[in-house]
Amino acid sequence: MSRMIFSCLLLVYLMACTKSEDVERLAPNFKSSIPDNNATDVAVTTSIEIVFDEVISLIPNHGITINDIDVEVETSFTKLLFTTELSGSTTYTIIVPAGSLVNTNNVPLEEELKIVFTTKDLIETTINPNLVGENSSKEAVNVYNFLIDNYGVNCLSATQACGAWNLNEAEWVKYHTGKYPVIANFDYGHLPYSPANWIDYSKTDFVEEWWINNGLIGASWHWVVPKYEGSTEYTYKPDETTFRTSNVLIEGTWENQVAKQDLEKLANYLKLLKNKNIPVLWRPFHEASGNKYEYNGGSAWFWWGDAGGDVYKLLWIYMFEYFESQGLNNLIWVWTTQTKDADYYPGDKYVDIIGRDIYGNNTTTYFVEQFEMIQEIYPNKMVTLSEMGNVSRITSQWSDGAKWSYFMPWYDYNRTNDVHSNTFTSPDHEHANSDWWADAINSDFVITRDEMPDLK
Image (cartoon, rainbow, N blue to C red; front, side):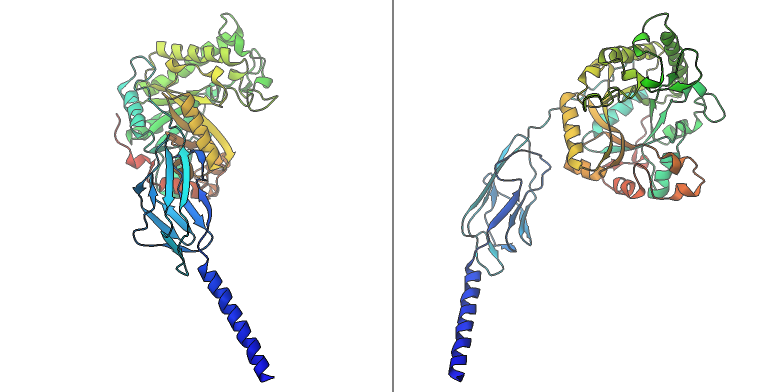
């Protein structure tokens, strides 16, 4: 009986040994790669890795190459990680020779592994070296040149005034990160009410101080018009007014009279900045096409885009030429695309920078696609993330290839309306919380105000 038991145990032992020896003889197997084998249109920012089905290590003089050149490569558990930089419009062939790596049982890779992929064509950009305005001020030229010098290398930070005419959002960023953004952006949307005790665009002391401290100034205009002729109620929504965009350029119409009065009033406010030698990143008539190209039934959100692209372009040029006639040579003109809206583009002669506004999207690849698409359409213009909220971190966007000139989260009225309130100290924010900002501010490529040169 004992002999039978011994025989059975011996058989079990031999079977176990045989099974263990079989496992040890198995070589590591290729599982997947980034990029995929035979992939095309691969972004140059893609990190290359090859994954095996078990933990691996490299042998000395492994001989792994990319396009027949030895490359730096390291292992991380089951992965081969490459540190090579990619170029556009290039086919790459990775060769992992048989025997170049082993598993934990020291069994080598049995067969040569070959991965081939092709990177996408790089967008060729030649940014226009000159501003579109005639006789642009020295300071405007200095700012524009600074943007060009940093384009694709660094990204400027920006905040939007809470409501219209203050630095509250910039102060909130400073409170939570210790640094100010570069660009303080304002809005002339309350033009019909200024001057008043709650809004007065003639009070520019804090704007001047920002510029003196090497910050930059931006401005937009949510241009509100009367809801009907003679009304003292105002709106920017086309379905809330009888104001017709197509009548603005027709002499004698009430729309034409309103437009002339508003442009004159605004020009006088902008001259206050011009007279202080303060340049302005000027972004009027933004998001003109609304969502009319995104889906059936889409429409323009603002009255200035409601009559279509042809009328809109004439309106933009009308403002441009009027401001030029008023000697406003301190403006850098920023046009905002909604994409698919080329028929709204005023033309290269009237635009310095292309903006894009994006909200509620945390997919980094979407931002890269948007940036690349816009840059390809407008290869002689810088592209900026002119408005944003609740989006992926700017560090992720940048590292994946969305090289915006600058970025600007929109304001949170309830958070920053009163800098002395308890709500102001909260790290929460409707569009970009303090963690989002800290990640941006602490990155090497994001410029803050303290890092700015004197551009006067």
